[in-house]
Image 1: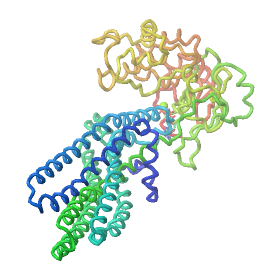
Image 2: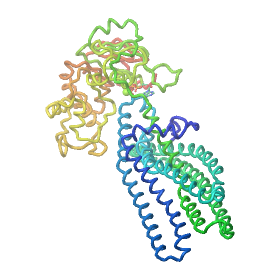
Image 3: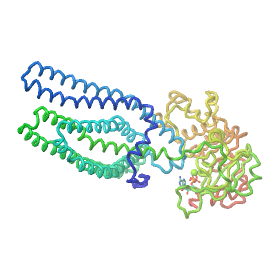
Length: 605
Ligand SMILES: Nc1ncnc2c1ncn2[C@@H]1O[C@H](COP(=O)(O)OP(=O)(O)OP(=O)(O)O)[C@@H](O)[C@H]1O
Ligand SMILES: [Mg+2]
């Protein structure tokens, strides 16, 4: 299971984490007031912590030196109150950020989901679903954590360190300079660490996406895996990916451990040096004991802000990576709403055909965006005119491009050249929504959603359609079995519900296609899973529906072809023959061969 394609765009190491994170601002904006207040509260809390050493100094040099018990009690009371205030303020901060941040996460997730719905099919062909899933879950979780914690605390701890250093320098500037000694090496290490960590963090998050893809495929393909006894190889693929991920996570941990060691050790050494130096000065009478106590307890109060910088930076880096991955999807261009007529036509001599009604393909060329450049296009100049109210069967060898052609009509893919018109109107000139309301489709793979039978079928109509339309559509599609389900048309189907047979699902998909009484119907082999008798019954019912609908029906079997008024043969990327079934049987050898039932022509062009 090679999944190398999955890891999308290569990481650019020179991107700035700050610039990336700034892109979050539009989402964070609504929560800005709370976030700023929270940061302010945290700074005040931290400041309160820094007052404690000053009280200590007063206590040591004042009441303790004077053996004034009352003063000591008073000082102790102050210390207690200050400690309490600090704790309360930090609690307040947490309360302030929790709710608005879950809103931020939810709105980002909603935006991502909406974008995924509006991105073209070509995008979804290209991106493994696990990568999208991990972005919507793991990455957004990381971002919420970042906004709740590292974002505020990088600021708060920075300010705390600054205030603390000023206090220490004011107490005794020589000792202060000793404490400041490690600043330069620590900063250098942090910058170096940031760059290394960014690369590894990105790799880890991409690998989570790959792993998600494997898990998802294994769950969806569980029947095939079991049927072919592939669970061992599947488990091996999973183990390999997860051990790669583990390796990456270990590298992250090692990097973090290194930086942490530096950040913790160097200041510790500086504090030790200051202690020795300070003690000597106190002994010489150059420094009051209270000042030394205040100095050292300030230095100790700064230990957590300094120590935390390592993992705060790491978390910020992960958040930057998550942001990057989020916007890789958000920056993809969605389908334009259509109706601009921006698409230029290259088909020549199509004016005459376009003037007619119905569904008209002229000079349609299509090449899949990810196809090899030297391969011929899948469709290479398709000309076909389906008259209004006519139903046309589309026949061709497997792999000849029938499904591809049907997908072009609702603009699931865009034609490379040429044009398609509905009643004389270029489909690129129609708003997508209107186009898709006019054209109903049913595909080879009948997809049902986790919803009731009725909801699945009514998806094909506008909101006005109700039970009458539903009943009629079920009847046309010979899907009466739906009424016999445990809860009738309210029975839940799809992944979360009752399992239906392939033919049952196909009939529901067909019902969905006809329920809106569309003007144009595009069916991709809609009856392939039905037995001959059911197929005949569906055909008889469809005939009535098709009477005033223009339809393009992909067919493999003569019985399905007979449903249509005429047949078109797709071969070599073009329509090579059009006529009635009987005409083509007589005139066209390839058609006769395809329909002869002596086995399908299994060539892929
Ligand atoms: N998403 C895609 N990206 C690249 N190539 C594709 C894609 N989908 C299909 N193709 C290729 O386009 C060609 C036509 O495929 P298509 O599905 O249209 O055939 P078909 O006529 O519907 O076949 P069948 O009768 O088996 O359903 C095939 O060679 C296929 O490999
Ligand atoms: Mg097909």
